[in-house]
Amino acid sequence: MSEERPELDARPPLLGRWRNIYLAVVGVLVLQLVIYTVLTKVYS
Image (cartoon, rainbow, N blue to C red; front, side, top):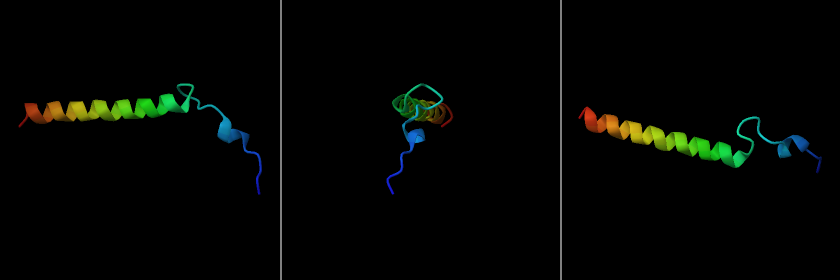
């Protein structure tokens, strides 16, 4: 059952490449970590 699936090779609709999407997700997670760390230090 080796059917061709061209949709699996398609480019993502945002940011052009899958690598860019992964980098954006990691960047958002790091940004949230920094924000939560700063808020914890300010309000503790």
